[in-house]
Amino acid sequence: MPKKVRIPTPLRKLTNNEELVEVNAATIGEAIAELQRRFPGIQERLLDDTGAVRRFVNVYLNEEDIRFLQNQQTPVKDGDEISIIPAIAGG
Amino acid sequence: MEKNAGFMKALKCRECGREYPLTATHVCEFDFGPLEVVYDYNRIKQSLIRSVIQSRPQTMWRYRELLPVAGEPTVGFQVGFTPLIRADRLARRLGVRELWVKNDTVNYPSLSFKDRVVSVALSRARELGFTTVACASTGNLANSVAANAAAAGLKAYVFIPADLEQGKVVNSLVYGAEVIGIKGHYDEVNRLCAEIAGKYGWAFVNVNMRPYYAEGSKSMGFEIIEQLGWRVPQHTVVPMASGSLLTKVQKSYQEFTKLGLAPETTYHVHGAQATGCAPISTAQKAGLDFFKPVKPNTIAKSLAIGTPADGFYALKVMKETGGAADDVTDDEVREGIRLLAECEGIFAETAGGVTVGVAKKLIVSGRIPANDSVVLCVTGNGLKTLDAVVGQVGRTREIKPSLREFEALLAHEDRVTA
Image 1 (cartoon, rainbow over the protein chains, first blue to last red):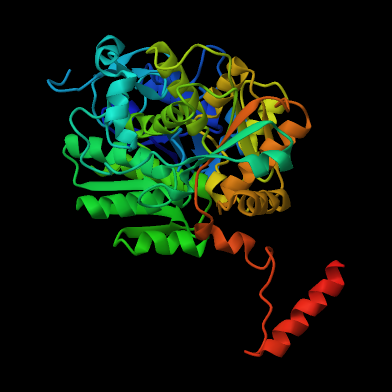
Image 2 (cartoon, chains in turn yellow, purple):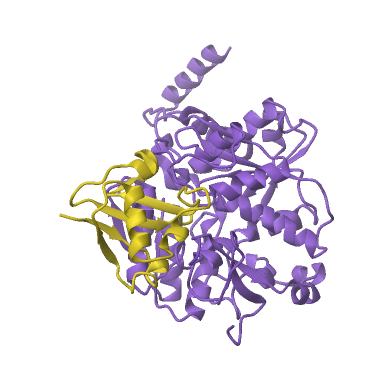
């Protein structure tokens, strides 16, 4: 069973407006690489020149920020959902 | 470009500089950097002079050229111009020469600085044709969106952590807003709202309206300058949740200086957090220019944002202005609330206790020199966070309606205090 990636509005132009994309990756980092193979250009939106997740991009596995897990090395298993979400202001 | 954009020129990414039209959008499509309003300062300079400002009503809208609405504001035009109090008694207790309190506990209509950002966001939302407004909130923003939307006849959805103080929940419900309690902390509310905002055509004040919304905070800094007699204070202590207010206070000082409304001077902007949620303060003290997200655990719920969206820029502002950050425990927060109340007659919410507590630490440690002038930004009203102090600020003594009992009580006190 694949894993799902929820694509945020600003990136849907790259995914032909698809909101939910399925991947087979074993880690978050692999999932980003797989997205890049299928939707060229998406990786540079998510990662900076050093390969780290950009400062204003938050990546969640199920409901947990990957910075509380193992960042891009975080393993993903079948049925998991990855969300990519821009940082938003306070309240 | 829209035909009528007032004094705004475009939205621009703070990271890469790409420009976008003045619509309801908040992040750069390229790098997710936050978008910020660009103004036509040459035109603003022609109309925004001291005598013009002074001739206008005493509200935040007297600086309207520097606030991002195209036409006249239609929501919250009585917001702002809250008192700036010379706080001599508190100054003596904290050990500093000149101390002022910018008192947004009495901001109109919902008793926090959030009315500033909401009046801008909702005025702009109306200009863009929205009829439903929404927010993700730690409480104060929810209150303000609910109140201002009600007065403007807009439909409002507010999303809050389900465990908020009762005062803040009731203060949203009473206006007829749809209040959704999320079983999680604010960062989870935020994440959900980012997803909802992408799906529904609503004006989320701190999501897709954020570039306009955030600018409203500048009015606090403009007022401080004007109320001090057109000067920038040497030190300003600002509470930090997302870090946005701190960055906008600096921007307000820069804009007034650039427009010749205040003389060039050296100033320091300091940030205050609660120890139970101090990602920005921790990074500043460690000399880092990035922060590590945390899971909040503090009574200062209005500041409980573990992944602060403007944390990076707040760190930058403190570095640029030679400001410092610090954080205080829950007990120190309560002590700060009491100090401000007992010295100045101002009852602030927990964030105010954070600001007072951190100011004390900065003064004691010399990071704010004793001979300097300081402004404390006190951003919300204590009546909203009674839960945090109930049972901790003295108690009522009960007696029968009898003079004898009262005199016995006084005699007992005389013995205790003698």
